[in-house]
Length: 358
Image (cartoon, rainbow, N blue to C red; front, side, top):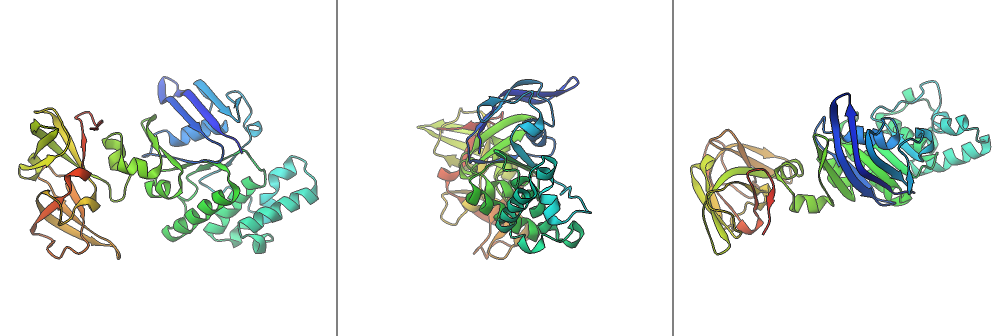
C-alpha cells in the first residue's frame, strides 16, 4: 500500500478552472472519502489521481514518486467505477483475471489470485457465472475483485454504490468497510452521499466548487464544522442554520435576535460583535426539554422513522427548523410548540459563513 500527496493541484478545461489548488496528504492504509454536491470536482480530482485527467499545475506523488506524467497503468492504482463495466461474455473468474491475462501472467498465478480474492469477497461459488446471472451487489463485488487481483498500492472508488438500491447500498457499505479492515489498503472514495462518507471514512474531504472546504474525521466535521457549508452538508438531518443578529454582547456572552422566528431572543455563552449579522447553528438532536434557550415554532410535519422521529417547523423567511421529536407528544402538525436547546451546544457563524470560535 502507498500514501499519496496533492500539492497545489489545479485543473482547467479551456479557460475554466475547476480544481483550485488542492492540498492533501493521504497516509498509507487510510480510507479517505471525497464528498460534496454534484459538480464540486470530487470525481475530477479522483480521475487526476488515476491519470485519466491531466493535472494543469501542481504535483501528485504516490508512494513518494511524482506521478504527473506517469501512464495510468504504471501508477500502482486500481479504480472501481460507478458502472460495473464487466465483460458480459466472460465468466466472473475471467473478468477478475482479465488484467493479469493482458499482463501475461501465467494461468496458475492468475487462478490462484482470483480464487484468493473470490474467497475474500464471498464470490467463490459464482466464478463460473456470467454477469447477467448476478445481482447488482454481486456485480459490484466482481468489479472490486477485478481491481483487488492487481494488488495496487491505492484503491480508487468513483461512486461505486450509486447504481444500487437502498438495501444493497447499506450491505455493500458494510462489505467495503470490512474489506478495508481486512486488507489495510489505502482507499480514496468518491460519493455525494454524506451518510456513506460518515460510515466509511477515516477522514472526509469536503469539496465545494473545486475547493477543499475542510478535512477531518467524520465526528470532527460533524461537531466542529469550519463554515456553514460543511455544517449544512454533514449530518442527516442537516444542522439548522438560522439567520440572527447580535443585539447585545458583554462578559463573553451574546444576545441574538431571530427575525425569522418572531423576533425571539436567545443568549449564547460566546462573544460576537454587537450589531453583527450571524447564523445560529443547532443540530436537531440538541433540542430538548431541559434546554435553557428556545423559541416558539409552528410545526408543519412530523416524520416517523421507527426508532427516530423528526418534526419540521416553518420560519417566516421560508426556511425550516428540524428537531428530534422522540418523546415529544406536544408536537402537533398545524400547531405552535415551544422548543428549547442547550446554548452551549449551539454554534455561531459569521456573515461570510466562517465559524466563530471562542
